[in-house]
Amino acid sequence: MTSAPPTTDQILANMNVSLNGKVPMAAQLAAKVAPELLLRHVQDSGFAMPKDETGALSEETRTLIYLGVALATGSRACIEAMTNKAHVLGIESSKLLETFKIARFAEATRVLGNAEPLFAALETGN
Image (cartoon, rainbow, N blue to C red; front, side):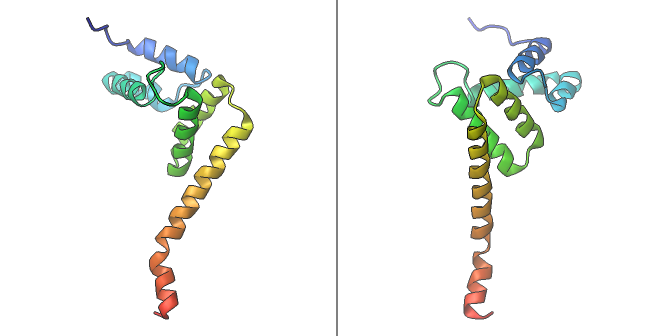
């Protein structure tokens, strides 16, 4: 027997708790204009970041990875959400800053890799 999906109000209430009282505006607006999209988003969140012991990573690790990806991709809403979640989880500032440093280095490595044609042209004098 499958359980009924959560209501929009339940979703927003759960987000409010897990994100330190700061539900992203996009989620608030989606709840009003596309509640089925918000439900799908929450289902995808549960798939990617399971709350139980079925996941191989801890909730803290998943949050830090998500934060790092959000930093690297420039997703302000996700950066804010994962920062708020990190606060709820009590993740130390040093871990948040290390996550930032890793994301920054990954981005710098991407730029370095993208410069391969430039470096090759400079090497050959073209």
